[in-house]
Amino acid sequence: MSQPSLPRLGFVGAGRIARCLAPGFARAGYPVTAIASRSLESARQLASQIESCAAYDDPQRAVESATYSF
Image (tube, rainbow, N blue to C red):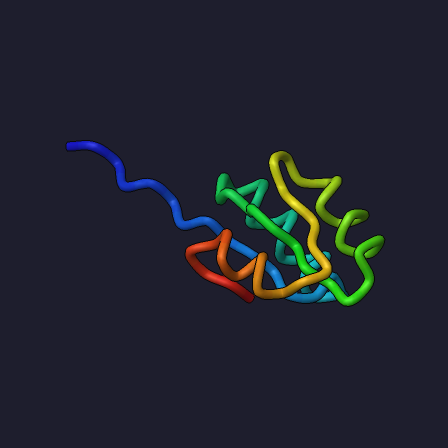
């Protein structure tokens, strides 16, 4: 029996909660695909810590790239 793939996760906001949860989920093996923030620089700073994670200043783009969004 094959393993189901893990859901892709996206975060809207690059604040305290996302800075804790996103890297934690990534370490646990979940693909964190996108971080969106009003400040693109904040999104880039957090996304740079996570492999294959994109940074956006448009929350809709983060939501569209993920199975689940926070």
